[in-house]
Length: 258
Image 1 (tube, rainbow, N blue to C red):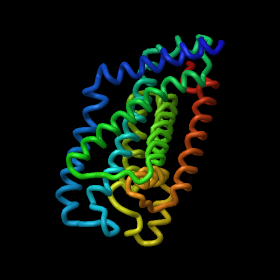
Image 2: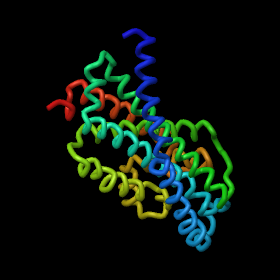
Image 3: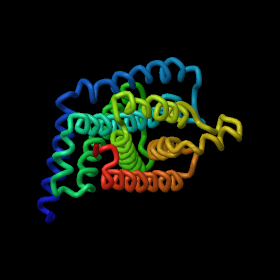
Image 4: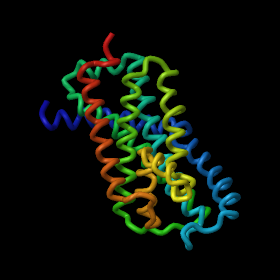
């Protein structure tokens, strides 16, 4: 395929994915917004008023906003790709794309584009909702853009990997329920790992979501439990690893061929 045909193939897949997001917006956009409002009210307003300030001048509400935005990005980027790709596989629609001359990397890019769109869009909505409850400053806009983009790419790729391996709807629900949720809640969304004993701080640093949350928080508040550079390296290398795994799986037809 030449460049023009590749662009058309990518645009076709990406357009289908993005259209799906807005067509069923009550399922793709609204739930995370409602959930985030509850988090802001319960954790930010009720509990946060008792906690007070973090590191002197930052309120607890301001502290948890970047984490809640990142949690929404992670969940929605993952769910968009795992759901869309698995349904295409379940209905055998994906075979139409696989037998076409479309390169596998273009297929991956098209689905990831949909996941990134939903992840970033929901993250922006949650961020706008947070302004009702607190004020935010921007310390480093570059870090905000880099971490939200790479995180949505990473979990779109992770969702694709889960969808490729999944054989039924129960299997694609295992990772979000037993992996993503625990890692997210233990990833520094609601607390700083500095309050933990030294051993548990070391354990927490094995959680990759910790680096994403803190890198994003650094962009807003200028504080982080880990080095922003380390966070970027961990996130970037994770993206490359999942991209390679997805590409290999589709090339070999794992989970896609009878």
